[in-house]
Length: 312
Image 1 (cartoon, helix red, strand yellow):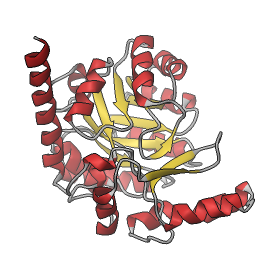
Image 2 (tube, rainbow, N blue to C red; image 1 turned 120 degrees about the vertical axis):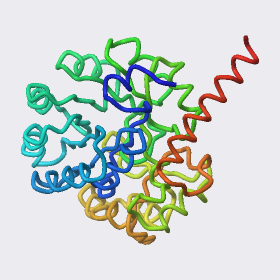
Image 3 (cartoon, helix red, strand yellow; image 1 turned 180 degrees about the horizontal axis):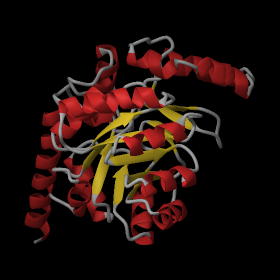
Image 4 (cartoon, helix red, strand yellow; image 1 turned 120 degrees about the horizontal axis):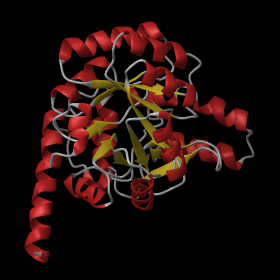
């Protein structure tokens, strides 16, 4: 199951770890890369010095390629981009906003850029700017979501551009991986399943919530038309919608959500936004990162062999 993405990024398996805010640090990203995938450091709202420290940590864990995620919501994104260029970070992923200027900084600095996009039109624009690849992420994923579902989005993006397309949103095993390839993708990005790895630096409470969750156990928070977040149902999500139904303003809702992502990583059930995709029902146990990656690839091989057996 090697694809062109492996050659483009210099990785063993065409699997990218999703950038998980307040969770994916240098040590964790380095662990994923060492296991053969592409680990991603989530810079979130941190400054360039923090990025430098985490890059150095990742390099102490692995000599394989890894990435830094830059989020356009951050006021410090430009200085973090310049730091990535200075440090010769091999790859950056970019999410949550209009990244035109940041893409140019990175491309001009020799960094490979992977842009998360919400539709085919945006994918074509990122290709024109010089992006190495795009991630087409459907609303089935955990965390911040768009408005399109994975299956039709990935297919249309793959038809629209000539650069590698990575599928994301609702993918947790080899069957989902194989489906992504059938749609025209050359790899997948997964977040929720990596949350349930032994090495992921979150509370065991969070990991167990994902393992225990069924397919219908996620809910969106956030106002329609604005940024929405997919989370596991919890006292936090219940209170959010009670507040919303009471007529709370956008500012009051935003204030209520402040710190909820970090609180989830610490296992705070009352004020934790436990981000997770709609594939929680497929995750049965906590495993080491390396086992997660090899299991996905083995499942994909087995599923492919079964299809060939059935359909010749």
